[in-house]
Length: 221
Ligand SMILES: [Fe+2]
Picture 1 (cartoon, rainbow, N blue to C red):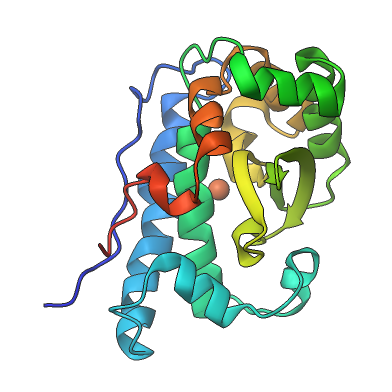
Picture 2: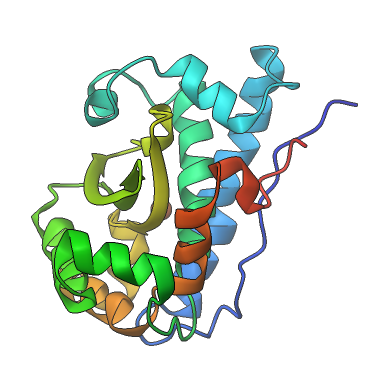
């Protein structure tokens, strides 16, 4: 029986981030949207003989395009979309926390070097998310240790580029915030960046040799 990709459990109680993100939003987003991506990915992996292929290998093999241009290259039925969205959402749950604390150590030093301060980084994340047109993601990535923000449309994911290591991500599709904040994307971003970014996970991701070492619970070995 080939290994299957699986939906990782939320790493917190679904009520833990309210009112920034409600249990109703998590029910739709995690058990609804994300599970649908995983189910479709497993069906497409069978169809394309990718059942022994890792998630990152599928993403990289099926998207030989620049990360910024992905949305122009794919359609909704492509295995790339479902593989990338499984990775993106798995990374998003890990990026959130009931009380994320504050960055420390090497990550704090990198933030102060590359953004000036933690507050400046939080403001840059909010601005990037507010300015992003339509569905997508705001990624904090490490490019050989240098921190950068990357906005991506639809299923864009920085792991297409092996030189970019994801550190944190925020989902800015409307399904991430509409039930709680209606069209006020800035209110969602302000509330999450104020106290719900998981800085312990970000430090782990920043220090990791590879994203594969992070234990995202995505299945398939
Ligand atoms: Fe989403």
